[in-house]
Length: 196
Image (cartoon, rainbow, N blue to C red; front, side, top):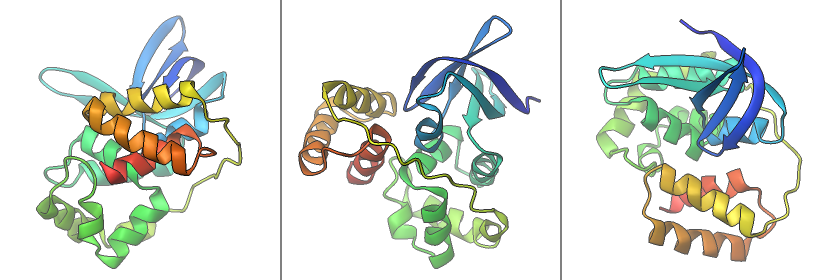
């Protein structure tokens, strides 16, 4: 139904963005991959995927068409919903995911919160031939972010919004920030997702 939205980025967090277009603010669920692309932008274009359920209407937004296509492939697998697909894309970059599926590494894929071994195996079986079609449409941002309490709070807030317990998240984040204080927020969250 919706192809993309272009507008002013009025609010952004690692799990969502609010984009104002024609005077309306749209709440859009995003992955860490998209967050890293748009976090310092004033105006953005996000490629959308619209899901209508009995109890909700949800917009998912992506910085690139390739990321959206990957999302659509993931939710096409029985047992994988929008939030699980977003969690997978937040945990692994598209190239990492292509590698995991290409090598059939279900054990590594099941490290994603809420993903069991059977579903991970199903994803690998169903997507193994389709991943080759996706282009590597990734841009690596070369920005450095000074780690401070704001970065820690932002990472913690994102993990809690993604469904992790506060205590466990705090423990993992403190360890990551201690070992690698130079990491950007989205990188910290990606590492934390693999450890939680």
